[in-house]
Length: 545
Image 1 (tube, rainbow, N blue to C red):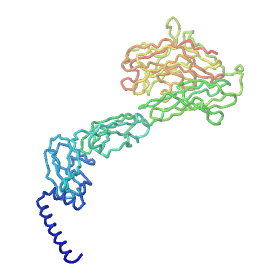
Image 2: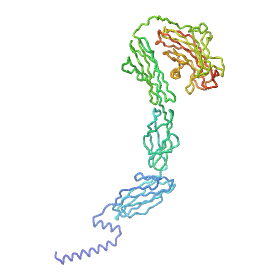
Image 3: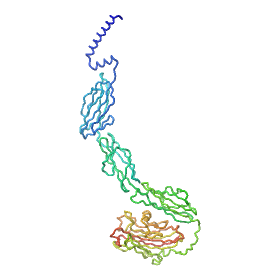
Image 4: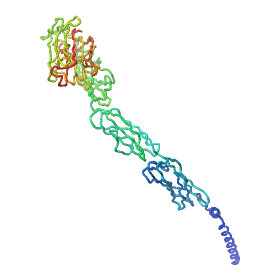
């Protein structure tokens, strides 16, 4: 192309460009932008990135693009983000306010106030426009949250240690659960971050403990109070196992009793019983039984058997008791030729006296003269009478009174009858023993300890009317199982027949004690000023095969 042609071409384009410029000047901004984009081929769509909500007050809490607010105090918040390829961002009306559009992009923002008492819940829309009219939309929600969380608290009912793992559960329909407050009293003062589990330390002595909890959300709304009771029991049950110290080949009678000192979580009445033969390995005999007496039938002559009884309370404390039996290495019981042989005599008190019986009596706690003992005619027969059936309240003897006889056990079983009358109860609500009838072997009334009483004198075994396996010490107890409201009303056990299994004493001499007790614990009743008398009739003691 020659120079002149090139000049003509430039002139033409210049004229054309001037005309185009004139045309563009007469268009709207939207049209100019659209035409420019079409001519240049550079048209793009607006977009919003990094949207956010900024809460500027404590009574606001944002979760993502959701704002939760409390209307109890004034507050303010902002929404925003970055708008790209956009010329302006407009905002919807919310909470009675319409913020102005933002053209200083990319960053954009709008502020809203939260007035006291407002209850509005809704959506704020931010719309980004480019010069062509294309849009990008971002939404933000705002919600009134005036309700506290809903929660629960779980803990073991019984524990044996002061460190307790508790389970905490809470949900919040609004801004979410933030804190929890655990306390041993209803008043809560120390808040801590919410956790699903927590180790709580119990303080004080064994017994019932309270645990309280409240939950709080991020706006300070507090839940109702949840409460549980936890029973702390660190004392193991005391198990007393009983078996004959020695026996002939054959079945071995084994029994056991359990005492769990107050405050007690309660015994789980399932026992595990193991047996050991002559120092060998332990073998499970009764892995889970509710029995409290049974017979071991697998004994062989010349061996020593140890029986181990284990039980646990509701808190998981384990108690174990053992009893040992030697099985003699012979099977024939030869006639007894004992220089000191003495038969059981006057067991029916037919002589009308206490011949062959030794009377015993004494005070209690250093006071009182003890209870009388005699033979009386009752229901047309002579009976031994232990205790005072005549004296009035305020003049009843305090202490014990009984009879004893030493004799040779020439037959395995001792049968006897007894009948108890009482205006009192055998045990008080605090565990103290009051009026009882006690039968013991080779142990006088003064030698019976409180622990032995607590092990034997239990309601389940009171006033036995079957066979009781006897061992040295307290064999059984009788008395009235009542409450304070029963005091002063006469209780009659009726005639009861009981059999003592004396197998472990065959061929030996033993001393049998039959004792009535009247105990008082407060000074006004000392020195034979007791209240609520108890007396016992005993008759028909006889040895049998």
